[in-house]
Image (tube, rainbow, N blue to C red; front, side):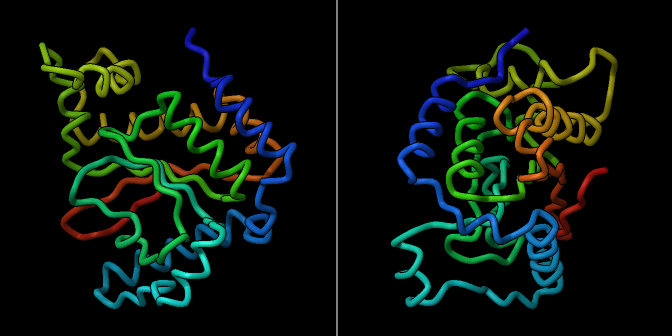
Length: 215
């Protein structure tokens, strides 16, 4: 079975913690509070009434000195999906990890570990979206050019052998990454168990702009 302990990332984060680099301020924002912030922000985005918070020159200068994101968003690289816009958040609010198909490869896991253990983010959202080309390619299989196979392999491992719809495949992929972060990847799983962070799966509907959180 593939290991999700990411020893290099774990060692790097441990060193940062030992040297006092870890940002304590994120601990003041609970996972539930962070979830409400982004949920309310998505409602504003859908309604067409965004507040566009934390985007002033003064705020930009402030966060240039130190970042304290409240939420990590593990999402797809699709150009039609921008977490800061769809959650109506500003500079320094979100720590965004993007790859085609929002997968749980070691680099992405290390990024989530850094954002939670070092920067203090308390909510991790695994955000898929409808009409995902990466999931569609994984489901269709066949020969793919260049390095694209490396991007779809993690998705293929998560998918069942039975015939399913694209929407089902997208949800299964999101839940698989959520499970890795919650139970298989040691550092984040330990933080979930201790109540330090919450991991939530979600799917973005591109036409409506709505983010639906999965149970």
